[in-house]
Image (cartoon, rainbow, N blue to C red; front, side):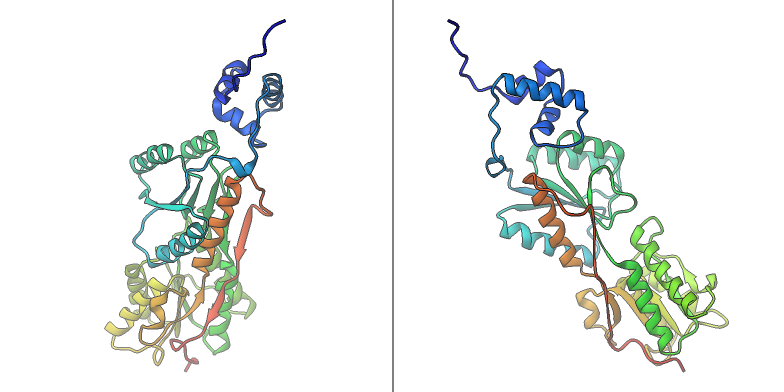
Length: 338
């Protein structure tokens, strides 16, 4: 009679026998769908034959860390998202590693090396275009990914978290039209971002619904930062027939418009009305307090953190795309058109 080998079989041993990578075996064990049927059948047969004992999800090894990755960290809204992620992670006993990859390949590779060493639970990207090589490596490592304000279509099975940007752009423009404004300037965000395009589409939809023509002379390019708001404000105020209101698609750009108005010797809202987008904490304290579209940044961070932790536990989420509601917050920077 041959003695039974009681040594516990490892994932690595199964991978060698099946002729596949360790992450592929891990994906089969965790019930992931991104495995070819023939490969899954071969791995499952070897797991059964060698008596591999699967651990329940509650016993899954944990690094106790979540990676939160931005393009840059020089914006106040980044702080709001960090606050939301950290609230959820802290309550779950998980640490947060915050990184900025600055859209450079070398920065992304450096972050990826560190992430491998950390053995992170999951990754949250914020307005980051996840390059195909990065996507492939995260899939290979079977690390769950959640993207906040995706640049474009989400990669693979990644879950995306956003806000109702179109509805926010529509509501802000409708509010100005309702106060009698007919020439409404618009300062756009980065055109590659879905949220920027949605805000502008909402602006156009409100104009069209009110029977107002879309005037390209009233639209300025922007990048969400103060300088773009200032330069856009200068150009719009310098038109032969300037607008009576300006809708900037970020609060920082709206504050740039404030400075352009001040330097021209005008006042908000006596001479021109201004609306922003985000509702950053600082805009309640500027003079006058800014009317803006509230984007629930902290809540978006909280939902992203809850979602990536659920995925790390092997749980399924109800929808691959979630949008949280925006809300128009009326303060003192808007007045009826003269």
